[in-house]
Image (cartoon, rainbow, N blue to C red; front, side, top):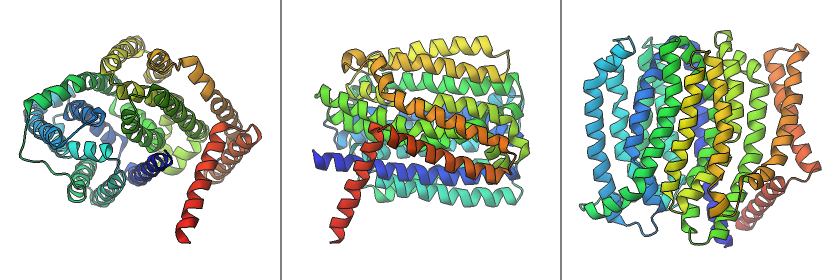
Length: 485
């Protein structure tokens, strides 16, 4: 049991390091590019990625999760999915290539045709990488992701910034995204032990599809719904409005991706391995919610509190209109760990049917909120995401009151200490904006005060997650010391 716990923690650390490294580098690159390029160029790329992101869902087809969830996955399963994905991605790209002029006319910008055709190549690259990623997750080799992701991120960053300085405009953004995916894939293929074999089984594929298609539809609903907000902003309003909306989303996502995706990718294979032991799945889900909330809440509260000096310092005055959106998105993302833990538990228990039902209900509510607010203004569209996010918490937690005997109110009680402490910390940190200091001094003071208040509060109120993290750190230090001896 101790070895299993150490393995989970080790893989979680590798995944967290990978996400942190990738996101920090990507963030630095985005800051540099935001200073060099006009917001309208970001808006143009955002319009194209609305389409490619939706198609990207089909690349996965829910098959990666099906491979991870299946208990006795072998080479025949992996190879069958690999060849299926590769052919399917080629078909998707060919369709996108010929549809590019039509898409550009819808967006009223014919210059997007070559951009769509080149950026669409990421679909083919993802088709090659998809099964490798599933194999790494299934076999808990997350250190492979670290080297592949960092390699792709650094290489594409150098090329993207170089092209931006060279006056390449929107193509700097296009090549950065394409090269990131290509180099990442190449490194995975070199470092991961699994390679596709000359074998294929329609029977195995059909078995995986029976589980995966529900996750595909669920992911498709989620992606279309999220990108629909961007599409509406870009079509009803302006490219600049879309750029501010997307840029506001980027900073909170920098934090969320580091924590939430680390937990998400490690939690599913761990829970799937214990799917026959419901009490153990329940306790692991509960611990995941408490731990991730304890870490995520203060980060989102702090980011919302210091949004204005941070944007002005990093992105310059021209990006200040994105500040209110960023603060709203911080509230939305603060509760993402609750969604992640509940949905992974449902997937691990093999209930992809329930997963799909939840997505249909949530997206129906979200679509209604979008229709109501789309003509009221972009800020009201953003606020509607807070409302639908609260409802989504309750909806995602509902099945686990029966599957795991872990209802939403109990989950809320587990999160409440971190919520209250983070809210108090965020309000105190926000008041520092009124001291009249420079942006750098204000931001530095806010960060120091926020960290100090949160740690002191955790110590005074003896928060369970704080003590749990301390025990993990002590254990790791003890093992490190023993290894040196």
